[in-house]
Picture 1 (cartoon, one colour):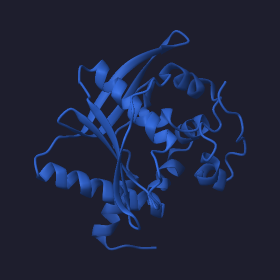
Picture 2: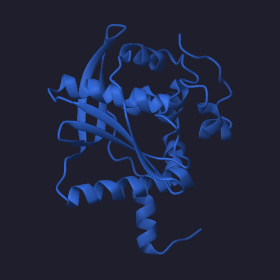
Picture 3: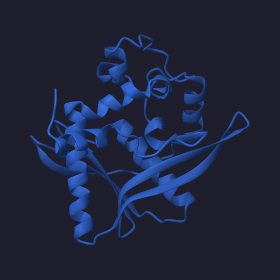
Length: 208
């Protein structure tokens, strides 16, 4: 399908890597996903980028950016704050990098676009937020409260607090290095582009 120049530019920007990974760098989103997804994404980046055009992902990107643009225009909070910390696994130092959506008045907000808002915070979103808490602590940023903000075309908007909890970051890095969490969460295989493309049929090797 051909597009006029403006839309072509927009689509190409969605598909473009915002920045290249540095050696031994892992993103927070890698730590809350199937380890095979991470490894296949490195091996086949051209397929990984196509996920940006899947309707739920595209919808989420646009709502996410619009929400943050409004907050930025109002002059409220710190938007997309990039933070990092080092973790040693198997005598190798890995850099964990994450971008916190919004920090406002020492409160952390993670935005999520979803079709149906759940009755409570989803497990992987809790884990993601608590990894961000750890990143903030390691970088001298005090966080009082943390929230997941769910935005749904059907249900509107709802905000849930997330209790502080320990997340074993070293274990999660190890599952990626040894590719042993396939999947990390039981529901992942049903939404996996790699399964759809026929690259992965290994679901069931969890943890290790």
